[in-house]
Amino acid sequence: MATIRAYWQDRIDEQAPAVRFEIEAWYINSAQKNEAARAEIATRIAALNGRIVSSALIPDIGYHGLLVELPTATLIGILAGRFLNLCCRTE
Image 1 (cartoon, rainbow, N blue to C red):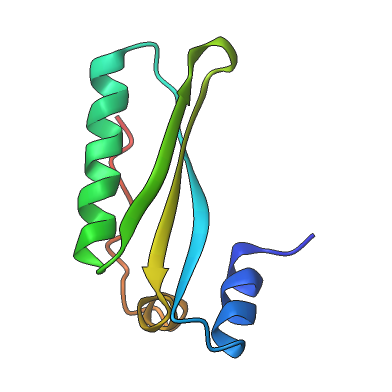
Image 2: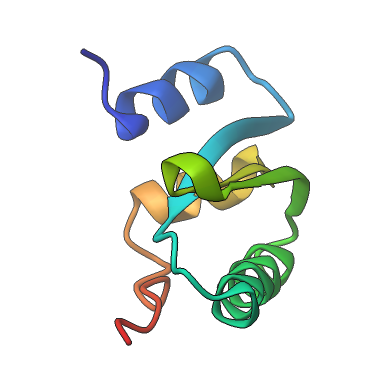
């Protein structure tokens, strides 16, 4: 099973200008808290010159996911350890 790091490196090696991947957020039984989580992820992705392509919230299965796209240059920086502040709150 490939890791996200391996997937990113493969896309970098292919010289893709940007890479799409999924972020799965904790599903919370609160529309307000789920929206706050989505907004925080959106802010962090935008700060990295990326964008949210789509998002899905499926309460029946407790799923909260976002398809995001980041520039390859940003991924190179992440893999090199230059963005250590990417962790989100744990509340």
